[in-house]
Length: 412
Image (cartoon, rainbow, N blue to C red; front, top):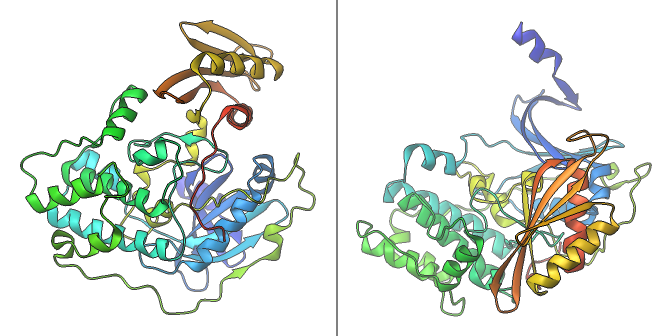
């Protein structure tokens, strides 16, 4: 009976048969697929055009597709083709199984140095390749919001948190250092429930490394987690490091020139309504760690932000004082039609629709943390409510109160 139900759920997309849902976010879902002619497995990312327009990210999606076309490496997920309908965009991607590295460590503990070195070599190969193509990781997405879930912002470099212009390549190496620490030691190098305390730990870069770790591995981690990006170890120096080079077999980019089909309908928004298109000058959405995290034998997605973050907790940085932020938040959300309750330096923002927790209702807590003399973080936590209304509220507040950084990323 179960098998019959599953068969009824099968969908067709051209020569692909779509099956179970592998993941789902705010404006997209990923489904397992089989190519009917070859029998090969794929992952199909399905994007909703209306939600893309509502979130004003259509240009980022175009750049994501354009960037994926350039990347052909064993440790970077591959784009095979892009199909479309009037309402959906279908990105046919390499299918990667094996689960998340974070889950493996959480259940079975840290890896041996030999195992960890092998994964770290793959990570560095993928990141280095992305850098060569002009693709860098960054903590702030194009909406200016700092998403925190599954370990983030624990891996973010101090110069990024400090809201200064930064070198994307060097900040990536800090993040790689955090990953290496977790792989070999089994927990995060910088962690605290209090966000302000966590940020201070990252700024200081005072990492505690267990004595049982080999001196060479310990030395590499310390060089990668140097809070000063000017003296932090470089990609070339990592590749020349003795510990890294042990049993190292570099992964080579693919040689074949695959002709990636992209349906022109994918970028057609006729018949799809939205308020206004976004500023095309915004930086690219593509994230090097998301790309390599989807690659074979190396799934790092558990360490980084996911689209589901918009359903729980969102933060953005600001230069307004704590007092001014709370006052401005109250003014903005009141104009949007929300009710506000104040309690012990926190705000509770509410919007009820014909009764508690019914469709259209929303309840969000807002709190401000002081990070430095001129830097504050606003944390928004959704208790319950409509995801789109929550997203609009967060975007409105971050756009009017947040700080925009100069992001060193190539636009494709």
